[in-house]
Image (cartoon, helix red, strand yellow):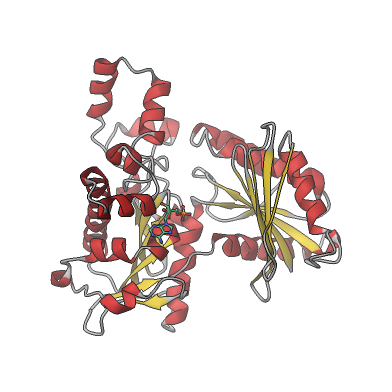
Length: 407
Ligand code: AMP
């Protein structure tokens, strides 16, 4: 089945067309700066040079129309007609407590995603815009929502409850939700496949290290704890986000710098993390370069980043009473041998020994075992593929919907 996968930001749309039986990506692309005077559109068909265009796209509906026009571009032969697309899979960041799995989108689902806007004000509104625009463009095929939070619905109460008055959880649903669920799910399943395992009796720590970073403890195939929390601001230090900090710092800052709620939000989400610590960049490549040129603040930023990951690995080993494998994924996890080595240095006492050569040479090789033979805990690099999870879920749900007796 050919599935259109859509991931909408406030001014961007990332898309892929995936053939789910062969799991092949037919085309991928990105529209940026929607609503600006000039929008930037990129399409990549495997085997062809990427196409980069600029044009004025006022809203998400126009952007989706532009993508669909390109899909019909015969020069690339991606599909012969739009009728070949049988389902659309939408990435939705926050499903609140309602969604424990992907779902066929109907009015009730839209309503529930709207209800979760409070919990994800930056993410859910653009996700809804994408759904609306895509439904308009493809009204006759099933649309499926796949939630970043759903994989973490198995967290036990001791992992998801914050130590605040319980009525706040009951009234406002303030709890740990966790994010990057499709990525943690994907790499854990790839690990099972690579090792011919079923999920029972397995303990994995999955490290999704990208611009946004999170770690997940996965026991028997289920998420039992994860570093992001009520929002994606918690946990590890990230490109521009603080990760965990003492909440008292906020009161102190409000008093000292007379910050408004809005500027506090900006400070924690956009000016902190690697960027804030280094005063130089949020991008790990730039930081490692500058660090190697002797910049001590860039070195500190990299050290804080790696130290937090090490702490969480120890934390989750305690939670699961050990672990069989640690998996690194996403931009930094897949590409930075330096960060992987930094994180896992001096962990022989816990049974983790890296194979330096395998680690150094893992770049661009796909799924690679990078632990030494004597390491009790296996360490892998496994490239993530969130779009494939979305496409497969959408195909499964679309198929089930089409087979319903009343259709
Ligand atoms: P993502 O959000 O998964 O796209 O990851 C983005 C992050 O991956 C950025 O911080 C990039 O600097 C980082 N990244 C990509 N390639 C490398 C690399 N070769 N070495 C270090 N960091 C990298």
